[in-house]
Image (cartoon, rainbow, N blue to C red; front, side, top):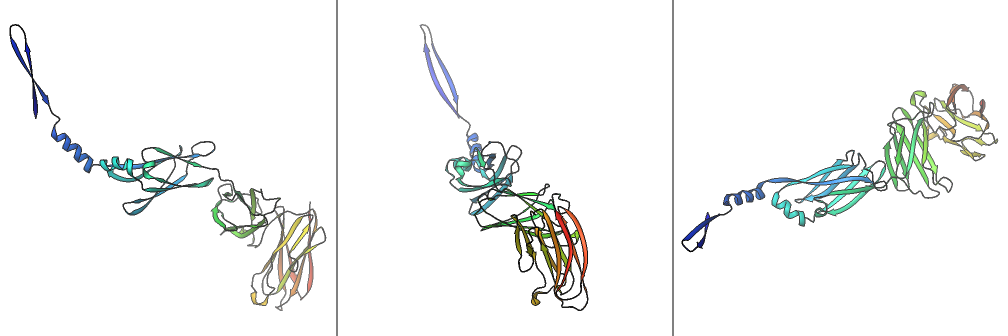
Length: 361
């Protein structure tokens, strides 16, 4: 469609008429743009960058997840940040007109969760319109907690891929050790006089429980070492330490492991915990005492996590003889990672058998 404008010029001799034509914008272009707005869809994405809250440095391998209600359906999306701490989540595909409209009006709540093994978890809620069209910064605070290091009680080498379970009050979490035999638990505050329980499990090692009682002296302890024993070393049960004595036998007889420490105090089934110069000795496994809980492969175990210097006397007593035959037993002594095995035989009830003396210096 064309429009015409007329201009008249006059001079002294002649009159001139100039006619100009004005072109209008083609109607089909309007139709094309309308169809573009109605039918062509584009991606709607949310962009994030995960950074250290203190250093402002990018955090790689952080897991970011969002939850939102999309057309009456709850949608959960997640992605891992790259080496620049960045990631992009595709929310949905929408027509251009709707994208433009929702850019200013979309009030759908978006729940943002970010996690990284070395940082505190991050949770935040924000409206979609506040997140769209910009890069959103997620600051993570360094996770201050407890590093548990799992080592082989014989070789003292760190053990990777070991399941470690930590329990304290209402806090409970399971994690696996890394290549250095370590795993970090985010537990900043410990209640005084409460116990921290650490369970270590692996199919090739003896399950081990370590209990640490929190007091004013060790409240700031951040590194905990747990030594576990390979099942290839005899399948011995119980805790390990600087000094550890294990008694094994077969059958239903009741043998008792007895140790006299350098302070001349005795740890045995009636006195399962003793102290010498502040160093604690514990009997943590006692077997075949009760007739209703007899087992065929019993063990008893006494250990010192940290040991006092001096001489330790090892004694085996046959408390109850339930079988007529003689009962062979094996004493295994671990001292500072070194192993010694001693064999003996229990022949009669109430027999006391001095087995070995260990000097720790």
